[in-house]
Image 1 (cartoon, one colour):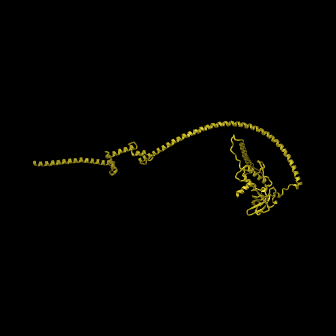
Image 2 (cartoon, one colour; image 1 turned 60 degrees about the horizontal axis):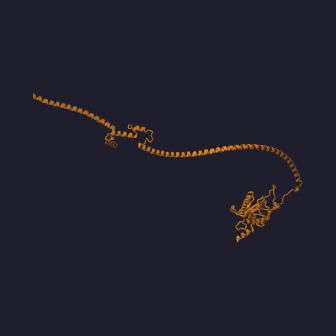
Image 3 (spheres, one colour; image 1 turned 135 degrees about the vertical axis):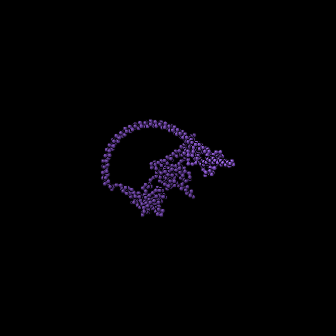
Amino acid sequence: MAGKSTGFGGTGITIVLLSVGALGLFVAFAVFYGKYSDARQQLEQYKKDNEAIVKQGEANRDDVRGLMTEARGANKSLVSYLVDNRDSLMLRISGDKKDTLNTIESKLQGVEGADQPLLTMVRSRDASIAGLKTEAEQASAARDAARTDLTNELSRIKQIEDGHRSTLTQLNADISRYKDEVEQYRKGADDYKTATQAQFDTAKGEWNENEKRLNDQVSRLTEQKLILEAQIAKLRNDRASQLFRGQDESALVDGGVISVNEGERTVAVNLGRKQKVVLGMTFAVYSSPQAIKPDDAGVYSPGKATLEVINVGEASSTCRVTSEMRGNPVVRGDVVANAVYDPNKVYKFVVYGSFDADRDGLATPVEKDALEAMIRTWGGDIVSDVQGDVDFVVLGERPSLPPRPAEDAALALQLEYKNRVAEVEKYDQLFRQGASTGVPVLNENRLYTLIGKTPAAARRAQRNAGQ
């Protein structure tokens, strides 16, 4: 019996121990399972938290790994490293580490260039500031120059104003003086007007009296005129046969045509130096003396042709035909006439100055005698001064005036100088008189052309020069 109880006891113990062990295992499993569940929950939460910081795909990015490496090097977590960098960046950008990118964007609203990177915007602003500084410096320099110009202009204006004030003061003084003078003139004008009015009234009264007297005389003279006209008409009727009939046409003829050169359009007339024909003189050509008839108004017909003297001989002259009627040419036997030409007229000459009548190149006062003798031979007359009937003034070279002698010079020298001065003054006076009165002033050569002669001494000198 005892043996059987021992065997059951060992088995029971074993069962108890196994039960206890199983229970312990169950308890241990339950404890470990609970810890496992907690650990798994913590792992899942860690994964979720880590996923919020760095997603699984982002952890392999180079820039993220670089940030993690920088964080480990700074002995910081990635989040702490990024937060510190953000705070430092915000301090650099806005000065407030609590700012965020959104607050920065909000603060940059309306700022020019806000769409650019901040560094680019800063550099652009720096360049703008530098340009503005340069412009400010230039503006400052321009302002200083303008101030200087303004100062100078103000100084110039002040000088002008001072000058104007001085001029105005002078003008006011002049105006005051002019006012006084004008007042005096006005008073004098009033006095003169009063006196003139009185004279006018007196003259008007005298004029009225004279007008009445003259009207009476006109009336009497009108009556006498009517009486005389009646008497003249009666006398004309009674003595019509004795009235003046005019000069015979032949008396108007000056000369005639003696030859005609149709090829050269020249003619020869029987008038020359003896008849005082000169170069340039003109004649009208008529077929006969009877053709020289005046019309009812007393005007003579122009003739069938006109001539101009181009060469003067002793008793004949050559003329060129200046105009001619078509179909009525100049022929031998035609007569010529000049209304103002008078071969019997004696021309008066005033001759003064130094002349070179002998053509030796030296003009002297003595050679004036040769020209006067030639003029007298031609038929002219010599007078000493320009009078109303003088026809020509012939002037040679102006007398030369020597230097004025000293006051202590000899009397003869002073008298000679005085005579020379008188000669020069007379020369100038004759020239002025001729120019003012319209008398032609001739030189020596023009005198020869006018009268168609040269002195014998001059002709000999010309022949000798030709030999």
